[in-house]
Every structure is written in structure tokens, then in C-alpha cells.
Length: 324
Image 1: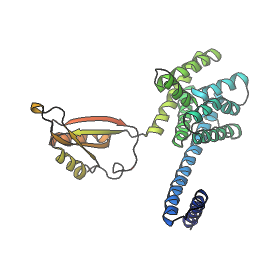
Image 2 (image 1 turned 60 degrees about the horizontal axis):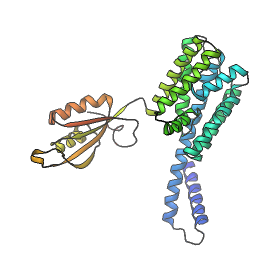
Image 3 (image 1 turned 180 degrees about the vertical axis):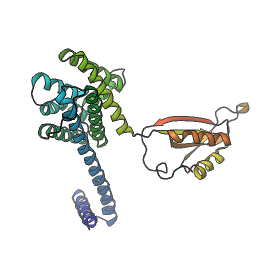
């Protein structure tokens, strides 16, 4: 019933939108159907992204108020700067979370797009609201547990917000901007920024707190990697072999893997003659890579295999059909 109501509403919105944009021309049913489908996809993605952001905000709030804030611990990035300012001035953290991130969000609007900036502002304001008004229980006073699990929940929050197409820590945006201006990678820029923050933490608080802050940052950074890139690592495999047809059949029939075929030419042939051959590309998990290599060697032990890390994938057969 709800699906039918939403479908009708989307159809009505699509028709009105087309009539508004083209008042002088007739709106066909096909145009309405196409726009309605696009609106449905946008709505589904918007809902999914909103859920990611909300989960991320509450997780980050738990990491801050359940672990770091009650024990005067800090983290890296804009959150670390906000925590330091809260400790020094005793002004509530929620204000600094917004103020510190505003310049980064403005920079993100110029570098990326307005939609990203709006979603990030909403996410940061929601985080500030959660930190200010929701009373999370203080979980532990063990310093090691605070550093590790505070970093974990904060990293989970940052990663989920990134999955939702926003940020709750704007230093990532600054790192992208500076990496384009300087001969440094994004990782190098983030490391430099956080070294400065940790140095101030050591100066204002103590060496011990600064060292625990580094541990918190490492836990958060690793958790962000898991959330954004996925726990399961994928490997893209390019196979060049004279027995390409047999390898293709093996991939599809035996390993139940999809593959893409490129038409190519050998660049190094006998007497300078290049031979045509199909180039096979497939994606597998790291755990299944050994099985793939074994099956290729059975067919052609001289096959040329190129492997590269794939951050994430969508669609295809990789998650649908297990190995036999």
C-alpha cells in the first residue's frame, strides 16, 4: 500500500516537474516513467545515506561522551582540535565541533559541491546536538580501553558519515586541498596535521595523554578504513594467456565468477609478429585468490597475471555465487 502511494506521488512529482521545465511542449508517458524511475533511485539513495549519517553521528557521540570527553582524552583532526579547545576554555564541545568544521565545509563546497557541504553541515550540527543534549554513560576509566574503544566508535561514526556522502571531521577536506597544492599525498598531509595537534596535546596536557591520543587516532583511522573500504578486500585480476578460452570457461563454469574480455595483441612475439589474444579481467576476494591461481596454473602455468587491490565493488556475481 505504502509503495503504491509513494509510486503515485513520484509519478505526480515527475509529471509536474516536466510540465514546469517544458511548459510549451507535450509531456509523454515515457518521459514521466524515466523521470519517475530517476526520482525513485534518488529517494532510495537519500534514505540510505541519511541512515548512514544518523548511525555515524550517534556512534561518534558515544565515542566522544562515553570514552574521550569524561577522561580528558583527545583525537586527531577537527574533533581533536575541538576537544583541545574544550579542555582549555571549558566551553561545551558542541560549539567547537561546529565552529572548527565551518572553514573546512566552506572549502569542501568550493572543491566538491554544495550538496556535500549541506549534508556535512547537517551531520555536524546533529553531532553537536547529540553531544550537547544526550547523556551517554561513562563506560570505563581504563586509559587503554578509552583510547582503543573511543577511537573505534569515533572512527565508526566518521566512516558511516562518509558512507552517507558527508563528513563530521573536516580535516579530510583540508588534506585533499593541500595535497593538490603541495607535492604530498593525502595521507602525508593528514599525518602532518595530526602531529601538530598531538604536539599541542602533549604541551597542554601531558606526554602520556598525547601518546594515548595517537593510539586513539590509529584506532579511529583503522576503523574508518574498514567501514569505508569494507572488511573484505577484493583483488582485480588481469590474465593474459594463449589459453584464454579455457581460462574463461574455468572462471565461469568452475569458479562461478563473472569476467570481462578485452580484445588485445601481444606486444612481444616471435620474429616481431604480434598475435591477437583475449585479455581476461575478473574480481575475486583475497581469500579466494589462491584457488584462482591454482586453477589458472592447471591450464597455463606461463600465464601472465596482474593483481591489484580493489577498494569496493557493486553488482556482478562476486557476492552472489560462492566457489564450488
